[in-house]
Length: 137
Length: 137
Image 1 (cartoon, rainbow over the protein chains, first blue to last red):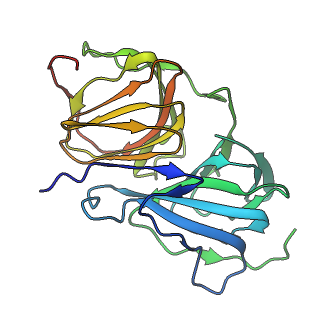
Image 2: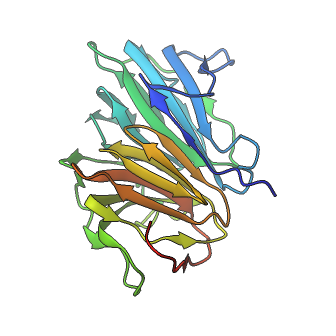
């Protein structure tokens, strides 16, 4: 097997050779979110049990309020904002870590001034999220 | 099941409630490395297929030169240094991503001026590293 070890250089929150993609194709409510899949879906990376994605939420934006069985881990690497976990909102900032346990309704919101960027790692094999429709707090 | 969702706050590269540990107990060559296990080993986190650890290498320090079957992913979150991947050394800096493919001999070295801090995610189920004994380049 070819050795697929590599360094993926980052400059300005963009990673070399990684496409900037739409957050979601689904018709679920979200605002101003982009996605870059950093690791876990490339050639030679099939052995990883997990996928590493970078999400960036523009000022005032938010991810889908959603729920799923698979757990999330999140590491904030840019800006600050709010993590909604069930009925509680937490302020999050640089290098704070978030654990979203199975079935927790959750959402990430950027503060007003700067983008909120976070690395989110999930199991490779996972269920699809269910959007939660409730009034935006 | 109790909801174990949480935010782990970070201040000065230390995470709230997380112990700072020795890098390794084994008698393998390394220098000035600490470890904090952020997620994947706590109560309620059993569902994660992976474990998230933060390693910090002091200026001039280095991790064990080693090899194992399980792949690594690394995200640099502090400082800069060098990733040795097989026979090649790569300069690494803030938010660079490293993929260490199975069986790649690898090592992380801090540059001389500041600590190198990186988040390393690995599969929960994995083989033990084998230290590689060769002259330090």
